[in-house]
Image (tube, rainbow, N blue to C red; front, top):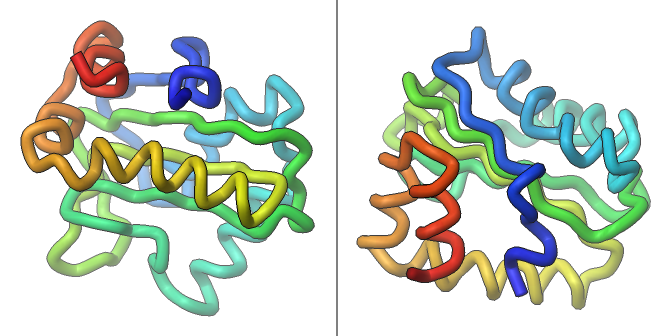
Length: 147
């Protein structure tokens, strides 16, 4: 199911980014290109970050930025940005962030379904570690596909 929301063309690998804003902007590009989200969606994430801090940093090395459906979601989708050198999100003990998974869901139920699918990866220490250390498209897809 997760590969439906996160096809290979929504996965990017970069060596580095200048800051957390660039990480979010870059992670949004596949979703923007497919008209899954609007620019407003990215701005809503920035606004929430400014008001609440990095609320979407879930674990050491892992961030999952998202906004509310009415803030620019057009379709359900995920994108993944792997940053080899990591970047600070000002998330204290969880920095640096190596994997940014942008989530876009049209409803609360769809959001829960996506989170549940991702939780299978995040709750498995070996899979999460493998995802954070992955350096190729093949190794990322292997982790996502549960192989």
